Image 1 (cartoon, rainbow over the protein chains, first blue to last red):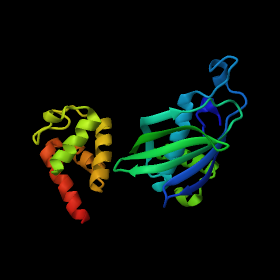
Image 2 (cartoon, rainbow over the protein chains, first blue to last red; image 1 turned 30 degrees about the horizontal axis):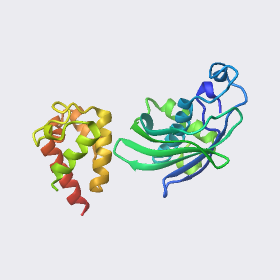
Image 3 (tube, chains in turn blue, purple; image 1 turned 90 degrees about the vertical axis):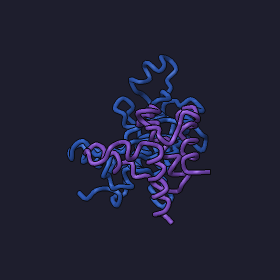
Length: 157
Length: 91
């Protein structure tokens, strides 16, 4: 996890398109400039970054379904619950499930746990759009490859 | 319950528009003021209710390309007719 660069996912653990599920994991860093402000003397991962983490796992799931043909943009957060504080060095297990695969949009239900304990969950809505250009699309696919996204869900090299 | 009543109920619940303001001639965008994000919620609920997948991308593309008027897809009675067609195609 590299909070200030919005790199929220460390590794994709599994993708199952039959059940519409992606599982990923991350570990909150020991130090980050984010913790200097949130909060001095009481470092906690901001709730919006936990939402972002669930959104990124959901985004990789949605892109895997189309072999990275389109990019999802977060447009809605419903029933978001931030259940507990998340401190530095906390291991995170992130799960995203497809709730609805619409035309030009997708809805997921996502959650984060740590050692089996629920941290947060939300229903997320994404608008799917064409990548702005091939270079950008390659960059996103390359990032997914680095995170261990199975090759079968990625575009051909 | 008719398709119109089901869709009007969904719109009313999703967008907080009084149910009695929604008529078969209401334009969902121009008259009811539904924006694109609320429309996604409505399409999600309609897809689930009727077991269909409204081809929203294709409709939007046709409108943007000038091949169809917004009324064709986004006036309530026409929208409901399209939904009925999608349900029939599925059967």
